[in-house]
Length: 413
Ligand SMILES: *Cc1c(COP(=O)(O)O)cnc(C)c1O
Image (cartoon, rainbow, N blue to C red; front, side):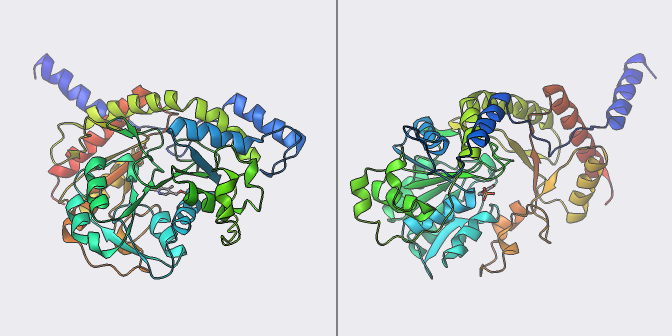
């Protein structure tokens, strides 16, 4: 054996023995300034958003103003969760029992759940190999509903210009689910500013972390006034800083039910500090994302999701495809990577488990099989990109995935 071969073998052996030991569910601690802001709220005890001292705006109202400014919209409402934001948006748009709402076949359970929670009926639209909503399928189904809840699932944005063209032509009002695109943009236009309303989550695994929480944003004054009433504002809407003028509420305040889902000052306090650091976090995510993406290129049988140049994304998770692999082989990749400390999720498993994301696992919705989407869904693997891991960690993680995918690809399974 030549020296070069020996060195190559040595490196290969090393690659096969490496193990990663970090925790994929460990997020960063809450920043020190945010902890101090939270402690200040606890010291004064005014946790309810409308419990404000003389001359005080309150953390929640301030957060809303800052979030609205960040997204570049006049109105923002902070609520108890991303799911609550979506249900509130649907109600504010007068979507009700029996109404059909178009949405992604590839998304997370809170999306069809929010639609079902108002008595409406999800109509699933297929997914492309780029992991975005299939715009041909959307166009084909455009006559079936007048609302689309488009989910930028795992941070992948479809051609938003084309989506809006299709929806405008068919008089479909669009709600954006930006749970994974807070801070993202399409062709320089912020994610969340394309449709009529947009929803965000501040649950621990999203881009800001308050445990639970969410936002609703809009340019539409009347819808936003309804959303504020729905969230449980009583008649205290004039204490908001990013809500429509009190006059707008005159038309809706007697007729809009209170479906309490408010944000509180404690969570708002820690979110305000985190929002100031969001752009730096995005850079940190995208640096890590690029390391894994590069590390996974050129592996036979593995498809990297190519991101469009005009998509400003936030790489807080990464996906790749093992297209047309058997369930057995995919299971083997998962368990072999898992044994080496790399936690991958398979969104396509037939039996729903964990954060499942296949339309046919939500059996409260009648759905027709979508073979083209099913093929893609069956091959989607997903990994979180915690900021608690370094770029060296991600180099190692990518080596482990490459190595195991290669081994399973060549096996006789
Ligand atoms: C997390 C999430 C939501 C909703 O978030 P919650 O705050 O957990 O209710 C909505 N859509 C997607 C795609 C999500 O991942």
